[in-house]
Image 1 (cartoon, rainbow, N blue to C red):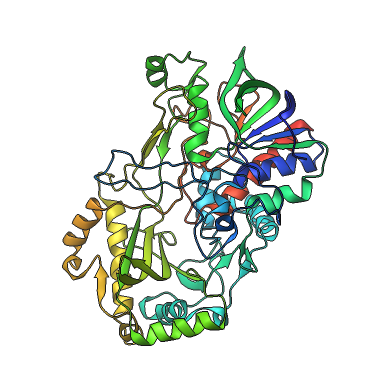
Image 2: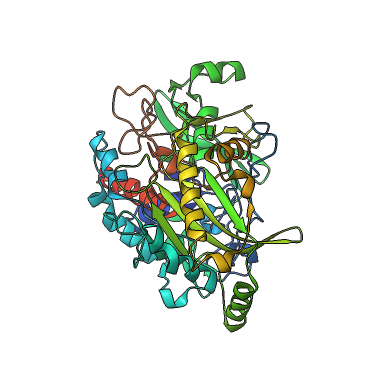
Length: 505
C-alpha cells in the first residue's frame, strides 16, 4: 500500500529504483514487513495518470525527474550522469536494452570468494527478471531499415547474426535486442515488481522521502533519518537495505559515518566504521559515438517505416572482442536512428569498452543530503591506455563495416569524429579530449571477502563492521559485467533479497 510515513518497520529499503523495487517486493511476498522509501515521487501503479509521459514513452530517454548529477569541473564541459529520482529509478528512463553479459563476468566473482554469485546461481534470476519486466525479443523481420542494415552487414567483420545476445556462453555476434517494452511503454521495475504486491498490508511505499543517513548504535543499524514533507524523522528498522545505486548508496553511508576516516573527519561526521572502500572503485563503460550523413535511400526507407508503424531508435546490438580481449568479448556496438545536432541530421552507431580499467570515486561535499556529490569516473585514465585502445579497436571495426559495399552507399560520409581522426593517434587524441559514458556506473560499495581492505560488503551484501545494514544494487559489483546493467541490477536485487529471506528463516 502507499501511505504516510511509518515510524518503524522490520525492513527499510532505501531507494525504490531498479534493485530496490525488486528487494522490497520479494521481501513483502515472503511475508515480511517492508517500508520502501523513495526520494522522488511515487506515481502509483501502471496506468495511473500521474505517470509523466516521458517516463512511459519507450521511444525516448526520460528526463523529467533527474537527480541532476554531472561531471562538474572534471572536464572542460559537463558530462551528464542521468539517474531517475522517482519510483522505478533508472528503469524509468533508460533505453530498455536488456543484456546479461558473459558467464565469466559472474563466475569470476564467485572464484574470488563471493559465494552465490556464479553464473549458474544467477541464471534463474535473469530469466525471472526478463519475465517480470515483460521483455520482448525483436525478430529480424521487425528491425527498422537502419537497424537491419547493420545487422545484415555484421558478418563481414566477424560478427555472426545470432538470435539473442543473452547466451552467457557466446562471444561475438549481432542480434535484435531484448527490450522491456510493451505497446510502446517502458515496463519499469516498479511495474514489474511492486505493482503485484502494492495491495499487501505488510508493504508501505512512501515517495518524496529522502534518506539522510543510517542510524547506528553499538555497531548495529537501528534505523534511518528521513526528510519527508518538510519534516526530519527517524524511522526505526530491524534491517536497513540501501538500494540507491552507485552514486547514492555510498553517499548515504558516508553521511552515516561509514567510510574513509580522512574524508569524514573534515566534514565533522563522527566515525562509525572506517571503511576506505566506500565511494571508491567507481567505474562506467566509456563510450564513443560515430555518425554519418546518411543517404536519400536510407531516409526514404526510414520515413516509410515510421509511416507504417512504430520505429524505435534502438533495436539491434553487436558484440565483439578488441585486441586486448582473450576470454569472450569486450565491445558493444549500438546503432541509433537519426538524431539532430542543430540543423544537421546524424545517422549513428556507438561503441563501448565493456571492461574498463579506469577507476574513479564518489565523495560528499557536506552533510546536506540534497548537496550534489563529487562524481569523478576518471574515464580513460588507466596508465596503460587500454580503455582508449579498446574504443579505438571498436571504432576501426565499425569503420570497416561502414566501408563494406552493403553499407557504404547507405551511411554516406562520416561526420563525427570525422576523417581527421582516421589514424589511431588522432582518434586517441579525440577520445582523451571527449570522454563519454554508457550510463552504467557500478562498484562504489563493492563486494569482497574478509581481509580485503577496500571491500564494503560481503557476498550477502552485509556492510562490514555494521550489523543489520546491507547494500543491494550495482554499487556492490566488484567489476562491471559485459552488459547494459539494467537486468544485472534486477538480478542483484533478486539475489540479495533471496539471501535476506534465507537469513530470516
